[in-house]
Length: 137
Image 1 (cartoon, rainbow, N blue to C red):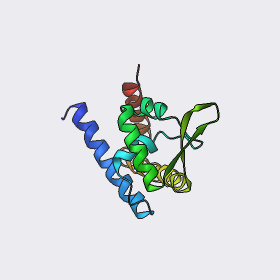
Image 2 (image 1 turned 60 degrees about the vertical axis):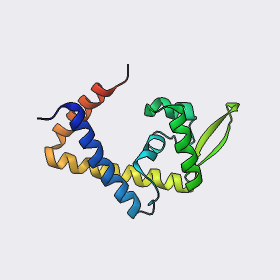
Image 3 (image 1 turned 90 degrees about the horizontal axis):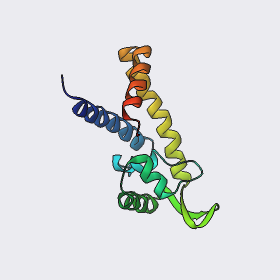
């Protein structure tokens, strides 16, 4: 049996391929798996780039580049943070919000498929254990 790193990488690859193929079919064909570092962690009312960096585990420079790309594609805008006018919030646009809705639906469907393959109880336990192992200290 492969080690946890190889298994995790394979699961991520399978998951991302399915998610981004289905997002493309839903009208979001310009998105790539790398954009998930922002989109998967973006709050519906916006998030600071530093929060996105922390949540995703990506360097701030990487997140900044991804935000630039997503802004160019029309998925996010940068707006002043009402809590701190010196800071900027990365806020989803209408296209960004649609992607969030579509992604939630697709992810739920993918996970339902996994649960059907191994049984709902085993899949729920897998997710719980996986979350425990990957939780940052």
